[in-house]
Image (cartoon, rainbow, N blue to C red; front, side, top):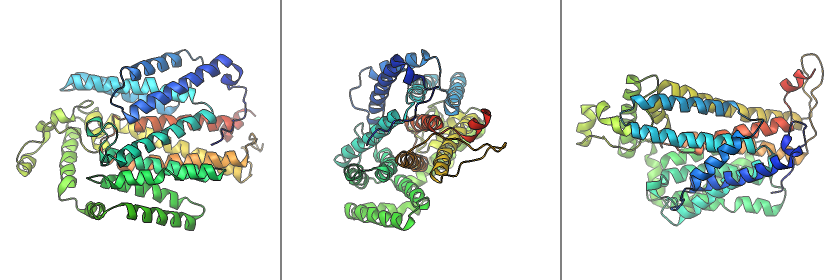
Length: 441
């Protein structure tokens, strides 16, 4: 895809300062490398993540004009909750190292990402890299029974792989809609069968992942201007999926509504234990990564009799939301919820602003002065619209999938939050909002 340049503004110091621009390009490369190591999780990473995050954080500290949107501030407050939890955590070692990992993620990746991804060209590089990562994971899983490169021990079992595929699908489809040439359209459509294959070859297909696909596709159809065409496209995807999937896949999906047996029933018991933990520690929870160490205190005799043994040592709650509830309490739930709301608010504002410019109806401020917006080409407006829709659908897929997998301490949510915040700041620079225009008069 071509890299259209944003209009130059006097406050964009990277344009006027060649050294700043060069530093930003290097930081972008570091961010890409970090994301590939963190999301693909190859067997050998040496100390690259630590070195990259340290270099990125130091570079961020040296920047005179820091971009710190609300998402980043809320992340730092959430990190504070984790620090507060360390003294009260039963397993302080687990709490310390989990907090340390999140500090590296927030300070060494999320803050620099917002700071240095400050143009539409750099944003495209990051977004294309993210799509490439999902395709690589899907290609690997297609020939490894649904497991990612890191396999189950590295947090890439069929549930996590399916979540990545559900997140990648809308990014590719909306990029296809924004493409201006047939070659680019083919390049965006070609990987989609790989994503679908990675889902259906799994020995234990993910029902939560299937719901994630449904959420993303539902958004795409509902908000499509050409709904009939969208439904036809969904039908084509369904046919392709049906041809790829075997009978065992559909038999597994048919059990989705049965919550009284199998893994669904097991999850319900784990969620009940997490709820008991929250009720006992409602403010800040039991501490990061301490769920597995406190299960025996909160499981009931009924649960023990049901399984014939204690569930103590179970690694995950199998739900981001119950993991958050138990381990970070009400404070964590509020901060996390505020980040989610801010993400959707930013995406909504981007789409609203693009539609306003597309309709060529200049807004009028309260004193009757028409809003003056910089000229943006039709191709650029379409690109921004498609990226906003793609990120929204992809983010919805993540939130739905995460109801059934423990992703709180994985980087997906936090990278998406930083990416959305960065995108919003880029669009603000390209097309100032009405409130900003009002301040000038």
